[in-house]
Image (cartoon, rainbow, N blue to C red):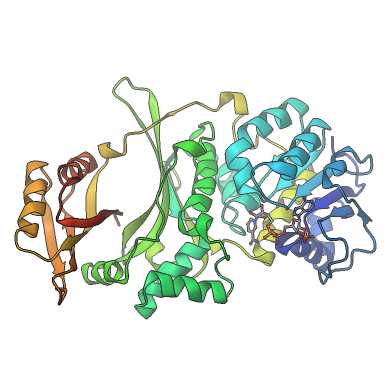
Length: 441
Ligand SMILES: NC(=O)c1ccc[n+]([C@@H]2O[C@H](COP(=O)([O-])OP(=O)(O)OC[C@H]3O[C@@H](n4cnc5c(N)ncnc54)[C@H](OP(=O)(O)O)[C@@H]3O)[C@@H](O)[C@H]2O)c1
């Protein structure tokens, strides 16, 4: 257990000296006085670990012990808290996390993949050990959303939580919007500028946002973390034509993670968790979130709508969140990692998304031949989907594919799903339709 009663330094072992790890060292050095004053005691790094001992990281490591095997940090007698900034849902990061908690030491991590997959078990162990498990940096980087929900909004029943949880996807969508360029070109530019990784799969396919959403949903609704239940769709199928069409209709496209709680027919709570590209009205606060910024909206029954916005990644913002957790631990503030004790988190079945009433944008890629529009509109009519607007975008010169975009009136999503089932075997459709929810103002 960290010593929380004295003014003795909080002794830290830091695993991972990459972007975030080096940032933590720099922040603790630059802001040492104010951090000490707020924590009530100094925060002192005693040991560090990374793969390559000889790499120049632009920070002075000479005052710290070096561990070749980071998992050994858990058993060091001179350490109160381990900070895990390595990454990966499993492997050495998870071993280190388990061993640290089992040894009764505090654990701070920025590892959303690990918390989304193993957070519940780690929280159970931490609570059994009476030690701290903290992961502010795992969700939306520098934005204090975990603290915002666990502390600032703790008196509220959260009715909705949703937001822009991945900076890379948001950079790509908002750049496509301002430049008119297509997805592939924009992704390539983002990679060259360092906004997207060489393998961008986790970011553009929504998996990274889904990790964060599963954590937010657990804290917001007292649900057991259930990453597998997040319905996840990325942005790689969004075309420049969709963005132009959305613009003409008064919307922008954003990758939105959203979680909602409701009840099923027997009155049992069910949890909707999804990450999908959505149309956002231009007047909505999330429509103004551009570039790599993240933003989360939490609607509390007493607080009303709360908007948290800021840098979702990067050395400084992420280090800021890590050190805030360390300050909490130094002050002796542990608390249940997911706001209520892990044993009290409820297992909630996934909600049927079709129960939602709302407007939907659909874009069909079709062969340019007579009768196609009639076929689509007939399917909509037969499924009770009422169409607000329908636009055929361009005509291919060679009789190839054209795009048909439509917006429905308010209605159950299950009707849209039914219409799509009716069209599933259509030979007129040359690719699966792109379906996006339209967010309300
Ligand atoms: N970057 C961000 O803006 C950001 C934002 C929010 C959350 N996060 C999370 O923070 C964590 C760290 O991210 P990062 O961007 O700092 O990653 P990074 O720059 O790739 O750094 C990872 C560090 O871990 C070390 N490492 C890898 N495998 C190791 C092993 N087996 N033993 C010891 N050290 C090992 C690496 O060592 P070498 O340097 O020697 O290769 C490196 O120092 C991840 O969980 C990430 O999801 C990052």
